[in-house]
Amino acid sequence: MNLSLNICKDYTKFDHQIILIDNGTRLSSLGLSSGDADSATKFFDAKVNHIYQRNAGGRTLYIVKLDSSKAEFQLLEESRKAGNTVNKLLNSLKITEASVYNASKKAKLAGAFAEGLLLSNYEFLKYKTKDKNEKTLVSLQLDGRSSNKKELEEISKVATANFLARTLINEPVSYLTAVQLSEEIKKAGKEHGFSVEIFDKKKIEGLKMGGLLAVNKGSIDPPTFTILEYKGYRPTNKKPIVLVGKGVVYDTGGLSLKPTPNSMDMMKCDMSGAAAVVGIFVAAAQLKLPVHLVGLIPATDNRPGMNAYAPGDVIEMMSGLNVEMLNADAEGRMILADALHYAKRYQPELVIDFATLTGAAVRAIGSLASAYMGTANNNVKRKLETSADNVYERLIHFPLWEEYGEWIKSDVADIKNIGPGEAGHITAGKFLEHFTDYPWLHLDIAGTAYLMKEDSYRGKYGTAVGVRMITDFLRNY
Ligand code: BES
Ligand code: ZN
Ligand code: ZN
Image (cartoon, rainbow, N blue to C red; front, top):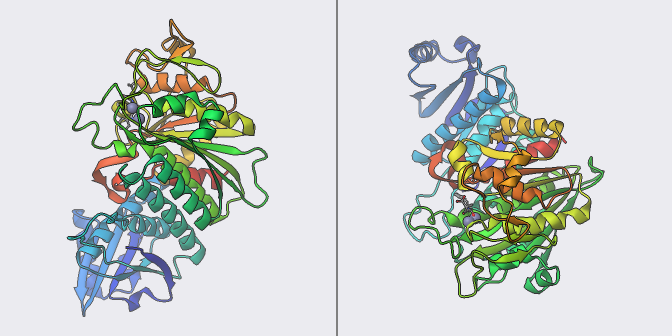
């Protein structure tokens, strides 16, 4: 259900009223009845829960207490999560509208709360014909004394981008083939204001994108290579920032077939990098950010069809480098390599790629953060980590030491597409590095892009990780 964020004059006019407070807020200052203030004080002293709920005269009051002794970015995350809790509460009661007042002195709490509540309202019901159990909440009214319209509009725009990316991820390959993905991107470009060019198989062959074509060999459906471009007014970057997204619309592992069930169940998510790039473009265009962006999305499914590429094959990549393919399941790096090589023609200021690339990244840190590495300077890395913390899509840095490069040298070709097993996310990064000659960052989102268990406002299944992070990064660029 689409939820709109609005400004109201007086939050007390609504049947469901939410008040945000923190450790420093005096309950007596809220204009509550003395009975209410007393029982809320007792409730919070008991520290069992941080949401006090009280029904009176047909109206319900929810006082949400947030721990302002935390660092700001953690406090904001707590507020988003409280938004999720309240969203669940209101939807379970089939409520359509509620109001919010921020009584704490931390001005940003209201926006974070609204964001968490809005992001929690996402649902993917396209394939449900019954038992939809649709969310009812359609409007959140934020008191004009503690929120402003512009901030709410921006939150809604980023949420729109987040929802679009999540839906692309949640779509199964029975609908979302590589061709369909490129058409969805075209549609998003028309609707939100960025240009989209689609290369078909013939064009991809003409460009000699050997990696993308090799992965596609076992498939019946053709590959696509989609180029997005957005140029805001007076961009702050002189040369483009290129965003590359892994668009494997389904990963069976190819001839190195994944065991099923478990490991294949979630492999429709293997285009989450592509979805993140699309989401970032939607957000940038909606917010009219003053940046110049190019997006590159190589897309195919990875299947063990009759002519599938086989372990031992040597593949000439677009860059001219020869790759010995020893595991057909390490297909992401094969298609990203051609896109990273293609990026050189833009003489980019910075290239960031997003990919559900390795199980090793998941084993290293689970779903709490994405693994990242790259050759961009420390200043850029620091800025990116700050954005990651700001929106709580956290990042952990891994090294690209040259010794790891030795691990993917091939006896028969220039490099091979797998390493020895240890540090698989790093050897994957080293592989990609071969195809770059510009400042570059690689985000391995295998652990964070798709969740089998709900995580607060991030939800269950596709998370659109990267969209909020890079939007924040571009805003501060
Ligand atoms: N798409 C997978 C990685 C993945 C794992 C994504 C879990 C999401 C959740 C990738 O193509 C893959 O299969 N990687 C292999 C590489 C290995 C064969 C070198 C892996 O990590 O096992
Ligand atoms: Zn794979
Ligand atoms: Zn994959």
